[in-house]
Amino acid sequence: MSRALVVTADVLRPQMAGPAMRAWALAHQLAPSNEVRLVTTSPYCELDGEGFSTGAVDAAGLAEAEAWADVLVLQGYVTHHHPFLARSEKHIVFDVYDPLHLETLALTRGTVSQARDDHVRLSVETLNFQLRRADFLICASERQRDLFIGQLCALGRANPRTYDDDPTLRRLIDVVPFGLPDDPPRHRRPALRGVVPGIGADDDVLVWAGGVYDWFDPLTLVRAVGRLARRRPGVRLYFMGLRHPNPDVPEMAMSTATRALADELGLTGRHVFFNEGWVAYADRENYLTEATLGVTCHFASAETHFSFRTRALDYLWAGLPMVTTEGDSFADLVVEEGLGLSVPPEDPEALEAALARLLEDHELAENCRRRAAALRGRFRWSNVTKPLEEFCRSPRRAPDLVLPLPSGDLAGPAPAPSVAEPAQVAEPAGPATAGPGGPAGREGEEGPAGPQSEPPPAPRPRSGWLTAARLAYEQGGPARMARRAALALARRAAERLEAAPGPEGTDRSRR
Image (cartoon, rainbow, N blue to C red):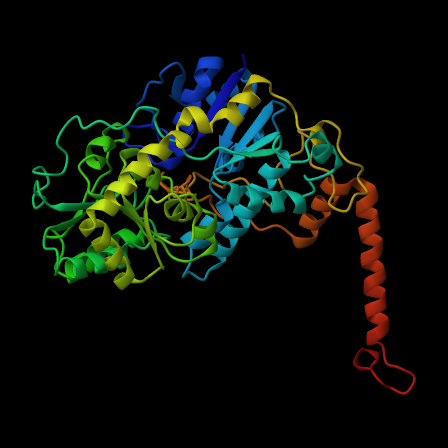
């Protein structure tokens, strides 16, 4: 039995977003075989664990918890805000279900500023440092695993030590998708029909589970519903959450734009409805079981390609036929397994047609429900967490961290456990500003979960030569740094020679 510490920066409240939902589920699954503590570095913890302890911790409390643990399970930017965790000599599992760098690019798209450049660079550096330090990594899909194996190769973690230990690299990184409760959802109380003014008992109810984040495309959906309402006046679209459960996270621009479009088209309160708050995690089954279809839409991007839309899993859990945009791994699953229909991005006509088909073709919709009932067992938390459970059962240091590679290797050795955080990653000068920082769950929302932790503050600038020198030292020691310095001096001497006037007053650099 191990002592496992699961750390999230998200709030632990009845209304939970993706990162907290995932951390909660991992703690719950580890609890039967381990002594487990789930802590949040936010000030909000309002839930008691079932078989594990919970709490909100400050820096001192987090240090105490780290000292207690045998295994640390970390996500998001917690190592940036608390670098001592990454320097811990305990066994460390990094949960990289949310590709931070791609999410940050999507989140800040459309802005041009030094702050954006700094945040993107910081997300890359934070993730790279986690990949360098991890004893074990978990991600949400095989597609994500391919992405991270490439990144691990670039960082030198696919090396003779890790490869010979396991040529599949599953002992270094494996897949733990978002999961589902073992029990099917139950309808315990009325939530939508006859409760929300304007939604009747016989209406066609479309639900958008989770938040409305900037990497999603609810605008195309609102336009499609406006078109569909002309032929099916009883269609109703309900957004289950606009306001993030963390009160410190500001409303996203896409939420404002979605409400404005619904108002402009005259759909608000007639065909489009918004929950201004956030449906409680334990209460979502009542909304899902009253729905007719589940819908999720997003833009075409690299973030989409590698995301895992975890909220869409709720549709699978409730046996809802679903319509999704093409481009991510879950959309592929929907088509391959016959769970619903997938449409091109930003195409309201195709989306309207798909919604109408599932509402009007009752045999197709019933087939989707049957396929969902047959498939959802694959995604039960009790099934998907087995790689993490196995690691905690017999925790082990990654072999290349125990016995680092020679410093002359091109990629440099993986850092030893005691190495400090990357030189480029500076400590925040003050309290972290709140905001999303991590789809998928983002609903990765987190794909279906909600944004990752808050975006970190911009790093303080460093001298370029100092950063390069520290990085060279950390990756190869004094000898490598000396070799680099000698090469740089030789290169500069050659450049000066080329620029000097030739025998006939010519400039060698223009020859």
